[in-house]
Image (cartoon, rainbow, N blue to C red):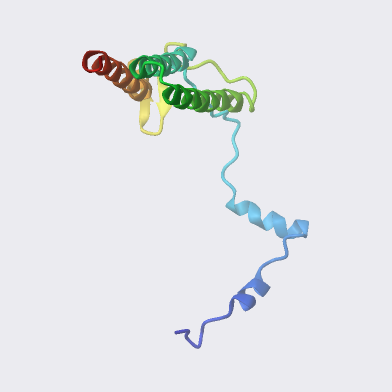
Length: 151
């Protein structure tokens, strides 16, 4: 299975530089990415975050209304609300780790720079809020179906 020219993993490991020496570490900097002073953040205005929170709030209220306050359903809804709070809370905490973010370019009347080019405010809001809006509509639809079907 091995060829005559294959070397053992021990031979390869012996050829690696010792990393406990500072000189050996300086050779590894060639693998690091370019350094810059850009502070990459969410760059979204607070209204986007409020829109997301409102959509998930509508969803949870609609699901609560659809289940009629069943004990097991309330437990599942509370757990889901806590997970959502952790998701948004962690995003809030991590966004502040690098210091205060710059004001969103969308709030300044400019477009948002993305990997595929600059997007205007309408495109950004549509792309970011499509899933939360769909989730809210889903919850409301389930609540309406339950009100019509269930006694």
